[in-house]
Image (cartoon, rainbow, N blue to C red; front, side):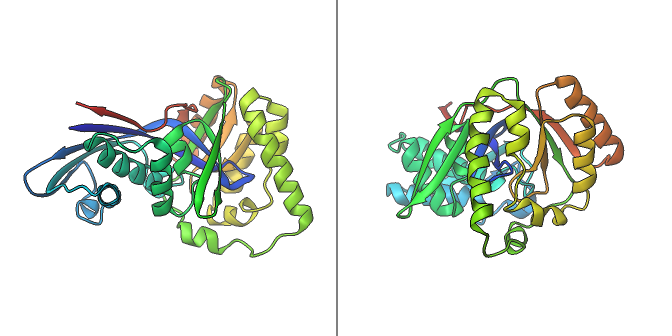
Length: 293
């Protein structure tokens, strides 16, 4: 039996549209076990207990790439990562499936080869990179191949993860974006994206606050989250360093270095929106991990 652990991820981080991604210490654990024949999926919603399951589809892609066969498979899932909320659930499933297939046949593929295969399935590398390598990853495509470099994260940064009880469709979140932006806005964005990555590494709250104000996607996507402005106001009142939409939403993440302030914000959000899921998370350097048990 193979045990695979994959972290949740948050992409964009405000100004890093489609290029920044961060691994968080919330995890999906998936077990892969060969059986005589057929497919069994345990621990998933009934709608996903079939051959269309994304973990299984990724497992099949891995086996096909490795030119191996598996006549029967049992997948057992144990995950705290919510579906379609902007915390990288699809990347988690893809990475888990590919890593499970790789480990089941003796791990001939390294992480960079998994990165390439997973990006082919996901379509872009921003969530895939931190799911595989951990930490804060900057990624880009070159001639159809994903590339990435990893930054450090200051240990005292806390990520207050505010998860609404509804999803934002990724396709809809892309459709609301304009097709063009000015050179002035592009310069604004590039400078802040570069500064944000370094500020995360050294934990500079002043630069984090200034750099995280986005002009490329949040001004358009915030309208898909009805409570966005109210939540942002609460974050400012509670002296959070900054707040950004995680991925395409609906999750929002507030950044702070003060645990007391983080807990107060969570209390306020839970009073206002009792059906929301609020978590206090940290960055993690642990990307995908595999174990034979």
